[in-house]
Length: 335
Image 1 (cartoon, rainbow, N blue to C red):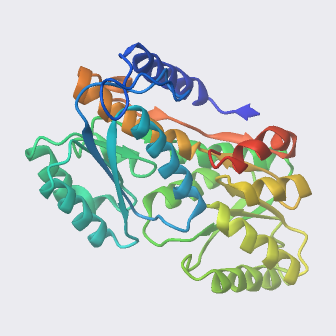
Image 2 (image 1 turned 90 degrees about the vertical axis):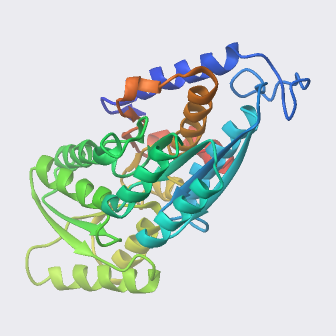
């Protein structure tokens, strides 16, 4: 697996967290449980904490299923009661955060896909003395909104990694498909692609909540391109949209390469079949796991992972060469 410059940082931070967890005394639901669950050196003793996660997308999305699984694994190890909620609408996401503030949880994990909508409620969390860790999106806003740190990939850097890869592959005209209007992370990804790519990049906005419409919009764009500048690569910004692009390519009788951000079992199968050229893995399992672990470490030992700086979990470029190892891990629901 060819890993970009950020992987070493992520590995180091992960090692520090696992080491800290491993040095804690064992315990499970109560301090007398000394069984080892094989993750992070056994279960933690001490007071049972309550940690909530609120994301801008969720159930039914394979990416967020993996994030949630990572968080649940860390919660089981850390003797944490894990609460989870999500909403696609930024205003409702903020209201969910407020509900957890009212419940006086011990920590909150939140995404900042639309940062401005979350600003006031995160100020309320700070005023209530509830520590916050941001994950996945909006990393540039994390510190100024009072979070302990941000866990995820730098989306602009990830976009540049894709742009570099497209250039290496000799491609010339890219279509970057944005599936959620106003999501700063998605905009940053396409901006990074455009910055680093040696060819031209055009953004295409689609309605990501309507997959048939998304597919038909991509197909129409590919068909229209036949009479002008040919699109030779489509870049989708999430694993479910890669499948839509593959189908659109087939229906449009296009020869464009399909590449994507994010990874799931379907993308691994498509890499194996060579219907997708490469994918960008930002390790969602690690984002959920480390976020819960960091809040537990902060509450039990006053640790701040990364010294308040972003903890990077990607990007890593994966291709068909990585399929044998990834097949097993995606079946486990951890990659």
